[in-house]
Image 1 (cartoon, rainbow, N blue to C red):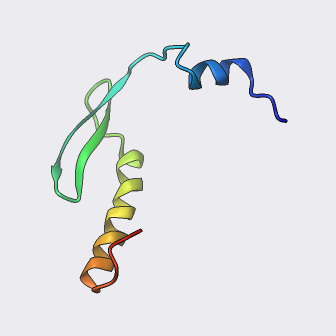
Image 2 (image 1 turned 180 degrees about the horizontal axis):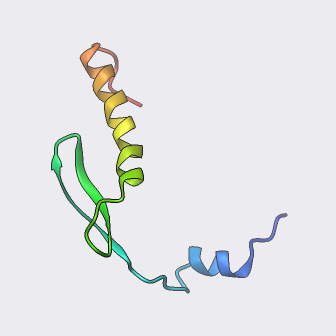
Length: 70
């Protein structure tokens, strides 16, 4: 069996705390109801773009009358 490195296991188990350098805040559009921002309050765009692809996919399926389940 593959052994997980100690630091990785400590992170997973919550024994190590990472510094908080950003936050999740309310978004301004229904298609992206939340944003991840850095310590200065600037949106971290790659994080926003990733889930918006899922939202777009879901909206396409719904507008086409396809099953809304994933």
